[in-house]
Structures are given as structure tokens and as C-alpha cells.
Image (cartoon, rainbow, N blue to C red):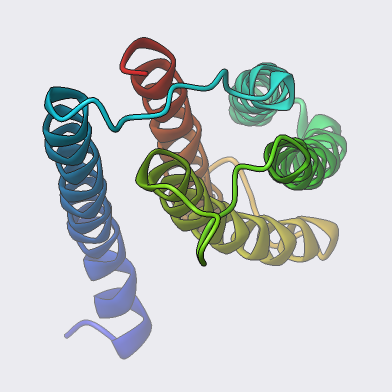
Length: 192
């Protein structure tokens, strides 16, 4: 008979994928709403086009680098180089925090250009960009929390080559929010 811990472990990966599917649906709704709003406002000559802040491009590079380091660290760990896991998790965590700082800088750049999220001076084209990126930042924050937990477990020697389930779950989620960011950045770069 399985213990409660074994049952939770067995259910965790399918539940993560269900959660990821839900997040994908939410972002599909947001990007669809953006397209519909843009189409309507363009047809009425009311859409305002503005360049995305350069900080978004830099944050894209940071996220791709963080995914590469996570993949490399986990691969090295699974091949027996146990000492590389913790430093790679530290690097990924730092890059995640840098990503959030770059997002804040980008939002500051938008505000400096008088592109406001809400209120009398706001416009739907700017509000959609803020909404999409704030929603993504919330999911990255969840990933940062998972990274912190995974890092503490790594420091305590919790993971072994045979048992790194939590590390794998964190990796799946982190890679997902990275790919989601890449999609959003390309989407909003192309559909301006």
C-alpha cells in the first residue's frame, strides 16, 4: 500500500501539467483579447502604437540564459557532478531576480513615455501590455518561490541522482515561464 507521500509524489507532475495548461489558457485569453481590442481600435483609427521598452529585450536574454543554466546544472547533477547543482540554482535565482528588476525598469520606461496602465491618461494599447506583463511577472514570482525552496532543499542535500523529483518539477515550471515570456515578447513585438 502506498503512503500519502508516495501518492502526493505520483500526483504532483500531472497536477503541474494541469496547472500549466490552465496558465496557457489564461494567456491565450489575454492575447486573444489583445488582438480583438487592437483590431477594433485600428479599424476606428484609435490604436496607439509604441515601441516596447528595451528592458524587455534584455529580460528576454536573461530568461533564456536562466533556462540554459538550469538545464545545464540539472544535467550535470544527473550525470554525477553533484557539486554543480547548488551554484546553478543560485545563478538561476539571481537571474530570475534580475528579470524582475528589468521588468520594473521597463514599466518605468513606459510610464516615462506617458503610457499609463489605468486612469484618464491610459489607453487600451498600453493597458494590455501592462496587464499581460504583470500577469506573467506574477507567474515568475511563483517560479522564484519554487526556486528558493528548491535551493534550500539542495543546500540540505535533499536531492540525489535517484531522487530529484522536486528539482524536476521546479525545472519544468521554470522552463515553462521562460518559454511563455519568449512567446509574449515575440507576440507583442510582432503585433504592435
